[in-house]
Amino acid sequence: MKETSNIESPGNDASFGVGRSAFDVRRFVWRILDFIIAAIFIYAGVLKAFDPVQLAHDIDHYKILPWTIGVGLAFYLPWLEIFCGLALVFRLFYRGALSILSALVVVFLVATIAAKARGLDITCGCFGHASQNWSFPAHLALDLGILAALCALCFCSVARARAGTSPTPTS
Amino acid sequence: MKFLLARQALILAALSLLPGVGQAIYFRDKISWRSPIPPSEMVSVDQARQWADSAIWIDARPDNEFAGDHVPGAISLNEDRWNELLPQFLAAWSPGKKVVVYCSAQSCDLAREVAERLRKEAQLPDVFVLEGGWEAWLKKNR
Image (cartoon, rainbow over all chains, first blue to last red; front, side):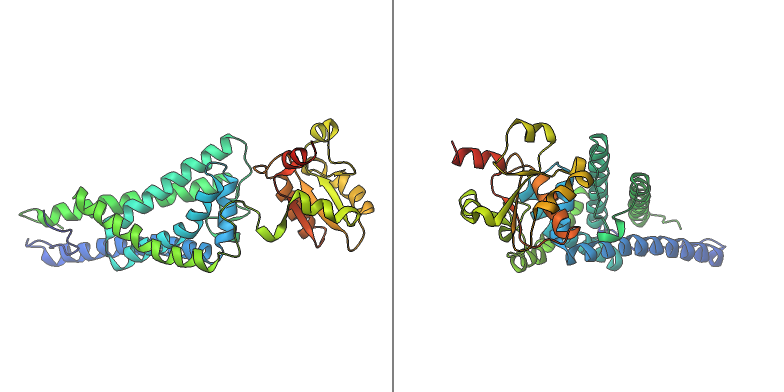
């Protein structure tokens, strides 16, 4: 199987100029979305990497994991977010990064809903102290938005790969 | 494609381990892997008893548990009735006295939370959490 190609052919129809232009705009929009998602995760990762002690306490507030595992995650997760964000920017290990970030957001969503259902007063710690006073609906809205964007990027990536391997690539 | 995706994810996961381990080594004195409370903020039952009159004992458990039994001389101060109980505690406290906070067991969070509030809100120095909590105190005093 061919590796994912990021270069798509605009096709060779009569309206080449128009097709090429539409192709560029679409590609540009997807790239912007890449950068936005990457920026969110790099920013969140850097904030948390500066204060892993606070993050360990934030993870502990969910009352899901033993303290020791929470500490391990507090040291690990910020860097995973940073590396995945950088992978989106540089399009290296692109799909691997998308799948990790999607899984992280899903796990976080489930944990947040479970904590809320158990009546726990949690601070997510997603963006360090900046997110301390966010409401539960605000957390959910942000996470669902990010998840939707990640899913869109995944589908786009798969569609591009298919188009790249197709004998008559389309724009 | 699935193999490629798994390989990419694995490489990213492995790469993230390196700075994570480095940071864990750098922060080894600032966080305990065994308990949410740093070792410098904990005190054992034996050590706390040696402080004798120079320490005030705080029971962070709910009222009904405090009423059931508690460390002799301990003052009840829990988060449920914080505003009501804090002035009573502050009246008993004097500068230079150490504060020992306990809850039911090692795994409970109440003592840590009360100790944190005493440090931040009441600006008290020398606030310690009893290692093992009420259970440990009972074991040593049976």
